[in-house]
Length: 292
Image (spheres, rainbow, N blue to C red):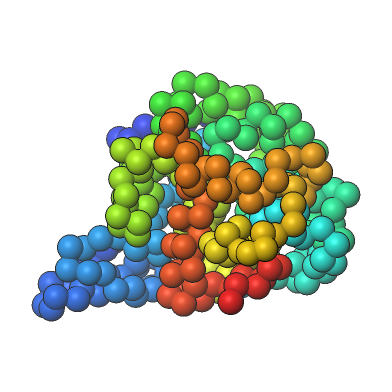
């Protein structure tokens, strides 16, 4: 296999043909690959289910996969002691994030991994443990995302080297042309420009949009609702990651990132408000904790 990476904007493949009816102020837009129809406002802004963006890293192929039921397993310590592993593994497709392991935690988070969404900042942590994240199961698909300049200069080369040792590795990358659409979606849903508001999109944001595109029904395990950290009395301290007991407190991390104006930060709580809105539109449910 030749590793001619199709990652530049001119190589980006638009999978879907967008059929837009101009007959009325409310347009019906169909994503032809999966035959789904969603509603757009008159400006023609794109909703999550019509963001089609994934390119095969080394063979210019596109990800063509559809699941009826999906589970997103977050990295939250709320899952510790839940004994959800068996239920999660019965789900048709499971989606995990970054370097969240299953070894040692299977009773609570399961073993099955269909997709793993990996941020540019986590690529080295994932690839340095190939037996856990690359070669553990044959079915797992890695989906990498990151700023195009950073991905092109360094990270794609690293992924290439690992793929030589693990030729069965199935890896896709969010195309450069679609990265901007994730920013546009954030602005459409929040009214905030990502760059001028000094916001970084989280892996959770990318994962949720990917799940909405690939899955008919999504169950999210371990994600707290947007008002969780402002309850009175405040919730007890919870490590940010289930696999890092000494990681920072979850709510302290969320609140700091949401309120900080110096530097760039993830707006976790803002994103969760959007997810709450999407729940009814895209058949998304949340548990552990439940969302009221």
